[in-house]
Amino acid sequence: MKLRNLRGLLLPLLLIGAWELASRQDAAGAYAFVPLATIGQALLELLGNGELLVNLLASLARTCAGLALGIVGGVALGALMALSPPANRLVAPLFHALRQVPMLGWIPLIALWLGNGEASKLLIVSLAALYPMVLNTFEGLRQVDVRHREVGQVLALGRWQQLRLVLLPAALPSIATGVLQALAFAWVTAVGSELFLASGAGLGNLMMNAEAGARMEIIVICVLCIGLCGYLMTWLSTLLARRLLRWRPTR
Image 1 (cartoon, rainbow, N blue to C red):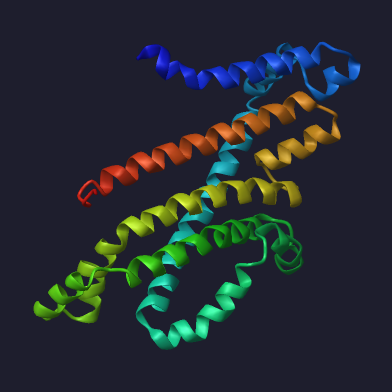
Image 2 (cartoon, one colour; image 1 turned 180 degrees about the vertical axis):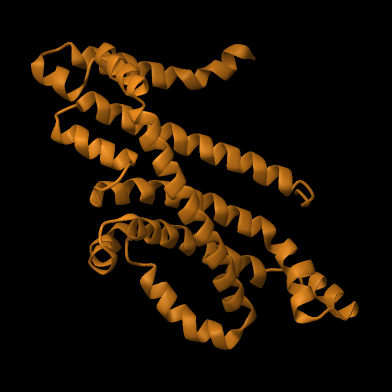
């Protein structure tokens, strides 16, 4: 059983070995595939001067703030579209048209409106989180079991009470799926916005400075840090969702 659990490490170890082998071929290979020893030294350097931690925390804070705004706005807009047919007919065409535009495609326009500061990055991350939240909230509320709605009618609940006590709890699994998707989009978009709007702290800005200084090892560290943090955030969110939704029936 233990050996079976370790099989997931096989491919990463093979990739690390291939990376180190490629770095030892010639000068071009050593530049494109930085030796592991050089990467380790750069990691110690970034940890020693605190640069990696400062930029990582800035990216995480930006992601969390944009994610929170996107979740609140997405749930509100999704609920409005699901529960109000006139609002859905009014908002849905514009919403579905706008969400076809890639998030990074909005960056030049938003930068012209708000500059390249924190407000622009926060708006971009919020929009990235908004789209999946609207879609999943809408679908979750529209697919609530008819029996749940009938219970609310039998108890003579008002519209707000039905939404709070019946509809939203029934739609929570779908909303939780939207949160997981929004988290992934928010994290990727936060780093992408830092790459395009190179101002302030953040992993994207750290990567841009490393590129300007031909510090390939720092770029590799940032890429690994982005991937690891994204994986950990998704894993923790999945555990939390399972804990909160342990009441839902399984098939």
